[in-house]
Every structure is written in structure tokens, then in C-alpha cells.
Amino acid sequence: MLGTSEAGNVAEVEKKVLIREGATVLSRRVIDRLNACEGLEVVGLDTGSADVIVDLRVGDHDGLARRRSSATVEGEALMDEVRRVDAQRVVMLSSSLVYGPHPNSRIPLTEDEVVRPEATFVFARQLAAVEHVLDRWRRGSSERSVAVLRPTVTMGLGASSSLARALAAGSGRRLGDEEPAAQFLHIDDLAAAIEAVVISEFDGVVNVAPDGWIPGDRVRALLGRRWSIPVPQWVREQLWALQWRFQRGPIPPGLGPYTNASWVVANDRLRELGWSPTVTNEQTFVEGTEDPWWVSITPKRRQELALAGVATAIVLAVGGLVAIAFRSLRNAAHR
Image (cartoon, rainbow, N blue to C red):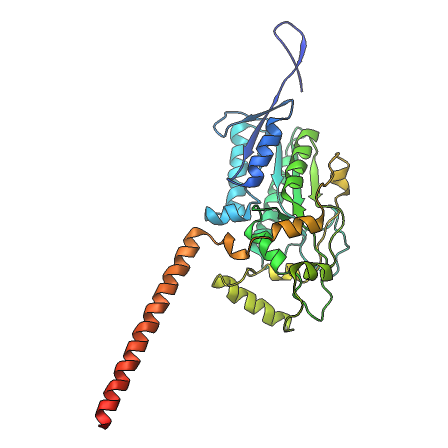
């Protein structure tokens, strides 16, 4: 971006970039990368104007849960921020979940694929709706541009979201059925992709994924699963729903269908911007699944489970005392 200095010389004017971020590992890495870019000035949320808004909040599933918010609410907040700072460019982190898991999809999915999120998974539906709002805003002026990144399952050591863990844990379960292929993107490669999109001024939708994918049977081998009891799909989904409700398993309702069909994506368009993955699917999967799923339970939920456990123990103890007392009275009556 060129301007004129007081001396009349042509000078480089830094573009102001406002980052709507959460307290996440990804946010910190994106901020570090953009701070190091020449021609960009990362400004605070209290700034009065910005050229570009980079949004990492709408697609942050865990952050939304912590804030008791939704992608819809954050999408509205994003548009309010766009109007407040008069930004002409938005870069938003979405998810390839918006394509949906459909057996008739052409694999790998490209950006031209019709958006068909799973109807029972609210988060994916809301992301698709926010993308639509942004596209409508972009069409309102020829000076506006929008870049939407759709990363596949993103993981990393100590940086895997509960959603990513759930999808990883849901893989390799279909004994007797053909396992769908899966992809796992490293968080560092996602941060690099966001940087590449921001500095390239790309306008449009771009998938973010490593090269290729992991065959389903290989995912099962990496998980160390040798056998499981085969049950009908509807039974599995009901069990997953109950497990998630009581935090005894990793599959939330609505996410199960994403483990039953392949929705891997192509990264050709992103590669054309000069980006390339540095970590393979398998390396990311192994690194991202080192910690057990229950580490992602929120402190509040852990407290609720602890209280429930205490309550259950009390009920059992009282029940035991009552049973003992009843037995003693009955024995005394027979004497």
C-alpha cells in the first residue's frame, strides 16, 4: 500500500490489522506471525479504524463453549466490529465441517463443493450462515473483500480442541465396515495459512489441509484399536449422545455422522498462494492425541461431575445404612 510522505517521496504505508482472537495457542501464533510481517501493523481491539479484520473467534468451538456463546452471536459481533472500524477486508476462520459428511461427495472436496453441513450439528450450520452473511456484505461494494479459511481437523501437542479430539476419537470404530479416510492439520500449518491469506490479499474461500489423507484402517491402527463390538449405526449414535451428556465419552450429538463418511479436502488453491504443509497427517494425529480426551473437560464441568459423584456416594451410603437398619429390625422381629 503506497502513500506520500511529508517530503513528497513515495513511502510504504502499513495496513492496520485488527485480530479478533481468543486465548488460544492458535491466536498467539497468528499474532506473532503477523507482527513479524512487513507492511502490517497489528492494532488493539480499542482502535478506531482498521483496514483488515482477522477473525479467529467465530470458528473457535471451545472458546464459544467457554463464553456460552455461539457462532451466530460472534458473527453478529464481527459485523458490528467491521462497521465500527470501517474495515474493507475480512479474513475469517471457518471450518471444512460446513461441507458436511456425504457419501456422494467427490473426494477430495474442493472450494467449489456445495456447502451442506450436517443438519443435526448446529455449530457447522451456524458457520455456514456466517459465511453467507460475509459474502453478502462483500457484494455490497467493489472495494470490499472476504477470505474464508476452511481448515480440516486441526490438532497439536497441547493445542487440540475438544472438537478435534472428538473427531479423532470417533475414527476407527466401524468394525466390519469400510473406514472413511481422515485428515489432520497441524496448528502451526494453520497459523502459516492464515498469514499467507492475509498478506496475499486473497479474496474467496480456501481449504486448509495437509497433503493427502490417512486411510481409515490406518487411523484404527494408530489408535491401537484391534477390535470392538459391531453394533448398528443408530445404536452407536445413541451411545455417543449418552456418553457426551455425562462426559463419559468424546462424541457430542450431531458430530457422529462426520465419522461415518469421508470429507477430506484439497489444498491446491492454498498452495497457489505459496503455502505448503510442514507436518504430515500421521505426525499431527499422533502428536494431537497424546493426551486423553478428558483433559478437555472444563473446570466447571469437572466440578459438576465431582459434586454428582459426591451426591451419588451419599445416596449409596444412606441406602446402605437403611438396608442394614431394615435387616437388623427384621432379624430382631424373628427372634
